[in-house]
Image 1 (spheres, rainbow over the protein chains, first blue to last red):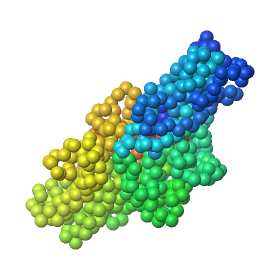
Image 2 (cartoon, chains in turn red, yellow):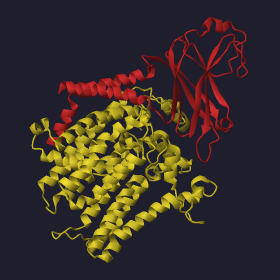
Image 3 (cartoon, rainbow over the protein chains, first blue to last red):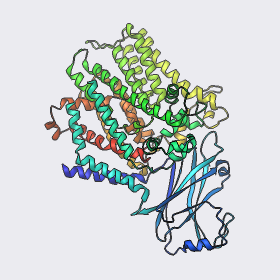
Image 4 (cartoon, chains in turn orange, yellow):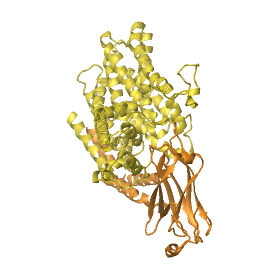
Length: 200
Length: 433
């Protein structure tokens, strides 16, 4: 019986991990691996570079495992097919990152073509040039409502490091879930509940 | 009974809210902060201790639509798809806060309190409904009292409990559905001869109270339209017994009033609000210049915005969602078999039809996992569980259960894991929705 309960807990844990892959609603995400030979810029290089003009919004993971930025996107322009770009800075070679785009359901929009683009060094991009190759995340936002919304919609873009294939922001939640299941198994909660219902 | 049930209700809810508090502040879907930045004028208020560690986490999934509607300045939805979320529930909360204070946290806290009040009241009404249903005209039936106690406690442990920590519209429908069924149950009479009848003295209770409750429950949550099956059943039975005047004055009148209210809400009101400039569903009129369209606004919204439709959810990536719904699919299906084949009960017949219709409808047309949330307006599966628990003489018998008792035990074990787990997943803004 004890073994069966432990196994049930393990199955629940695996199931939750499996379910996370099917998140929809107001979140879009992709996993991105930085190529092992990608010429990353050194932080010191970036500061002395004279041609860098930071007009593209960016997320920096300098000293962090995750970071996020909020950008406001005009849905009217989005309908004309313009994309939103955010540069990803301070990444590590061969590391896999999750790029997550969230918006509030009070703004009925959808995100399409979420992808990463590599910009070679000294190439003009959105009116900017850099002495180093850049990685940019791009997405298109479409109004998905009637009547169409013409507003500046705040969008949150998160860049999250992954460990063992799982984004690090999920770990605290997973810890709580594992502790919860362990607590339920240890306290024999299902058995207690069954007894309670029988005796009530 | 009342003290025990109240204590357990408070205990279960407290444990759930403790889990919400213990869930990490950073949610999987980070959009709650965006919502709060737009709806709340004071950044300090958003980040105050209790808001940060407790209240903000309850603004997940559909709660976003409800809070937007409740705090809306013009008191009506901004977009077409927002009509899918109960206007009745939002209006009730607006009425309680009386427009004095549109502060999002004030409105939200009032709504959460109302959610719990309605949930608790539903459990109490269900106790009396169950007692009435199973007493078989005996005023002091020990069996009825026992099954009623267990049913109410089981209802407090509904598989929807995680969502009901927030501001979902379901408890309002639970309450109205149970009051409606109770009123009908008190109204009808099934003498020993088996002839179904509705005494005239009960006309008000049947055709006004019961009808109003079923109608409001359906306006609040469209799946409650299935409660209309009660009127269809009663109409057939009275017609079979050649009580034509009563058939017209009781079920036919009630059914028509309920149907008219739904036509008004689903067709007339949307047509006058959106058509003809909307195009799309507006163009599918059955007759020119008639407001009735082939597709109702609700069906259009469900299909267009959420991909609801015949077998549309039957894709490999939805297998986890089907697995999540399996316990309720089994228990609802089995309870309908139990009360129609194993222990057939005449007065539970309409509820058996309603249960079967709901399971078929949700499995074939809807996002199947919502069954865990919406099924509790039907008490049949709770009566099945309670009946088996009463008939099981002691815990020894439950240690090695067989047949029905095994199903009951597994379902209760599933609830013990599912409710806390789902509460944490909801507070973390993780699926299932």
